[in-house]
Length: 327
Ligand code: AQP
Image 1: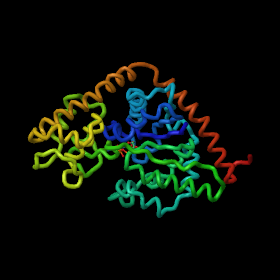
Image 2: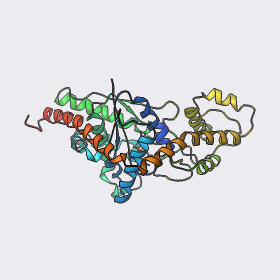
Image 3: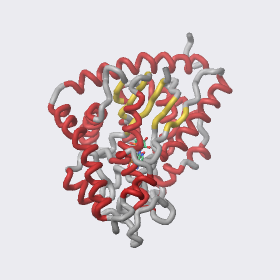
Image 4: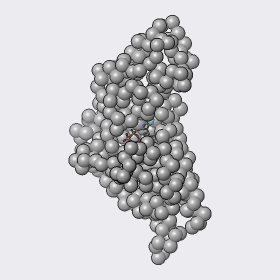
């Protein structure tokens, strides 16, 4: 049985990108030893309002359940409720070099233009993420494409630790979705669909069917009016096709064939909207029931206890190996 770890930040409303890039993959690992974390300590690398963060954390837990994760099979928990994460994060930070952290693409993107006021947490977030993963001796980490570089750093830090202090951590590998490892904005298909850029280019998991349809109808395409998959010269259309392929299970060739005799993108967009609504409606219904019920707190308490048992054992081993604990 493999060990699987992944997490999502409660830093805003979840997007279709989060779902197709990460959550949909989570569902395929329910027979493994899987840990799915709400990484609230990563959310605070940029300022968050306390009441809002608490709400978003709860909403994300409900969405984990609503998407189909079964807490009887997998461990769902909140990062800050397992202090071993922050403890190993400090160790991983001390093993990191400034140069390698400054080279991280996400850091450069998020820190760009902030000059003197760059929050230090943006820089030290990748070793924290490494700690999250290594704490469970994860074999597999299902993530979107934007996290692959951080996963490479995780492997580097694990290797560095093992080299200096003796074989302690497993080296995890990333698992990425086939078509939707990077879902792009519907308004700017050269930019990742992101929860912090809430605009009409972002489909939220809790958007109503009418809003989803409107956003897809308005998605940027091109003037060629012919459906074909070519991310270089047709980024907008190719992004829509990737979403279509991922939900329908059809290949790009089959989608092209299906619309070969239908000029323009209108019908394709309407069908895509129907697919997305069909995917999200049942999740939204379950989400409403879970938020109205009282199962979340118990589930999160049990999840934190289960995660702590494994995390504390592995943290202790690492601390012992490097001389931080007496026995
Ligand atoms: N557009 C995307 N396509 C595919 N996968 C995506 N992920 C995020 N956006 C896309 C994947 O979702 C998981 C959780 O992401 P996160 O919450 O840790 O933060 P992020 O990657 O930085 O995502 P956002 O939505 O862009 O958040 P903000 O705007 O708050 O920074 C990860 O596996 C991620 O790859």
